Length: 432
Image (cartoon, rainbow, N blue to C red):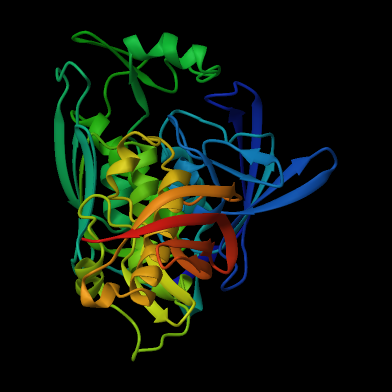
């Protein structure tokens, strides 16, 4: 597939669904390899926010992006349109902090873009090809992606009372997107309205731009556009969130009661799997490195508390190890479901286990006769959030050993060469 852009600029205006504020958008052609970039006016200046996972700010009932303190809300419908039609390059100028909700679907965007025409560019469009399954589960919600030659989405949508359960499976291309998905409107349950208002959401919501489910009744100012309109809109939203990967995806997505937060988590997991070069390893000394099987011989910890995946280098007084943070970590079920953050205390545990391997090696652990017991931590600092897809590089340095039993070490955790946490650690060595 070649990269694409618009032939001419398109302007659409309306009100934002969640802020209720006036919103005007101008989407213009852009050169090859430009990507989808928002240009947001803020106090007389313009802040450029690329449509990228790196700038995701909020995933509650919509997807919002943020950069330098400036936010643009509810980007998923426009991004879904670009993904569905294969538009890879566009300049998106925003007067306001939210995109217009229009009629609650992407049909107005699709019609506007197709009316001016699309221009196929000369450069090939990159693609994220899934080679191994990725699965994310949060209570009764789940989303996974399997290897597949193309893009297929199988989705189940239901409300908490399971009175409007819908299921659909589609192979996605531009024709299917326009015919089967574009007209599907956003929706919510009547019971959700008050909590959403209390959360500062849907200030611009009306029955002209959404379908409201109230018991067995459907409230809107026009009939359903598809018998299974809700699940079609869920698929539309999945595509909008996947667009934040920057490239198309080849795989079969299977989603059950998914939402924006779960979609974003899947996108981050895809990026971590498909482009491991984003998280480079430290230089390895293969003569000294320990794989996970060797590590388990020397650490007493087991699932879900093993915090070291590989030892890269092991010297007399230093050690470098790796902990891969995946979205499947059990801690993310409650820390935090809508915004998974790897707990600082587990970063501290990763430093302790790494330093414990170093002490065990120094004091006879390789013969199986010594084990490091973590006693205390001092000068602990957490400097940066760690999220799914990050790779922790853990470095520990032995400071001193007293009486062949008490060891002192300092540890640091890095993500992409930035220190995210650090501590001074003390251990007591004992028999296994």
